[in-house]
Image 1 (cartoon, helix red, strand yellow):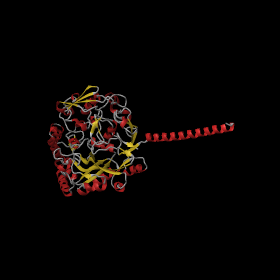
Image 2 (cartoon, helix red, strand yellow):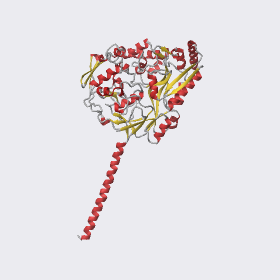
Image 3 (tube, one colour):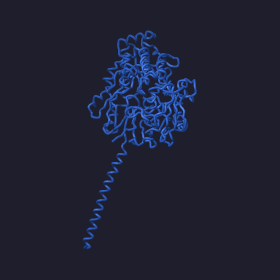
Image 4 (cartoon, helix red, strand yellow):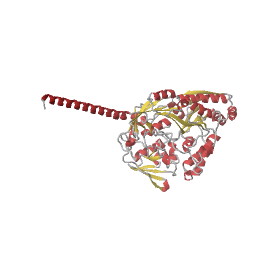
Length: 553
């Protein structure tokens, strides 16, 4: 070949090689970008309150339990359909003594985020701590009349060491029950029954669960970037979680947003992937392709403080409580103010979720309207109550959280009560949700807007709160018959589902029809916008949201 021709061939070859290299480099860069984008996709969601605490033992509010459900796990976890599925339990338990003794094997691959194995001893330690009166755990009574000796321990009559739970070895856990109860498996999916790493918890002391670096996790995520007071935090995939292959998201970023309009602005600028709506915003977005609406089991009500430590308040008067409970037009509240699928509720237990084991009839329909809006009856009862306490006027303060919706609700309630009850003045006290939770726990309120979303699909999850001296009561209410019925439903009536059901129906009537302990308002609905590429944001009618399978495509 001619020398000049050879030079041209070499030059052309080099040019092609450079072009090919450039193409490959370009494709590689594009692939790297796709992979990087996929890895960097962060799910952005909102919360309406900061985290009060993240200790499964001390949690007493929905925000804390929502956090706990992402970073911890128990023997079971609710699946996507809301059914208990094996989690830290390697298999269903061996049953002895007619189901009163359960023996669980703990998964060999279950670990804490610090590398320690999850053991049966972690469950024994946690459960005994929950029922120890010194702990004053708000949900210690969840074990009452269910786990052997829990009732006596909570009363201080027995040592926590006598609770019916024992680690037979590192991976074998024995649980003894007072009676086999139909809700026990559901209870095991809730935070109160989760394990705790004793060495770590005791090293942290009172700091445990107050910020990210005082926590270790055994669930799908770790909690990071939370200093105890900030209004943002992250759930980061836990590399030591036994089922990490089924956790598709590396990071979930949470931002506290108290105002619906502000939340919508974040959603519309792609800084939030999901936002809940109410009132005018529901009407505005109801035709949006990403709009959704669903019912929940949240029972929203107002508590009335009858007194504590032997000192009674004016609201210890039954007629005053009855007047307050019947003076609010709930239908107007849910249709206009909320418009999110909520329904007026005239009882404590919500509807269309729990059904008679024999007749399959809905609990709410069976028990009917126990305290409904009746302006004339409310006025009559109120006037009688004022007469009985020797007053013609009364001023009460209503405490609630400070989200935009809570402010609207309290203003609506204030207007209704003052308009329908002569001589009544309502002062509003809107505080942070954390402060509202604290006011509830310490019973530092006169009227308090609150509610309960439940832990498991049984009326007991709502009625259990109002047992005498229950850490969830905070009203001053105490009734021996009520206690007998509710405790019976947790224990001795478990073998007779229909008698148990009837006991719960009667208990709710005592709570509201006879004693007007609460002002029932509504059964919560949920209206929201969710980006079409956000998948598997798992919610349940009752129970904390589950982010294990959440994914942003």
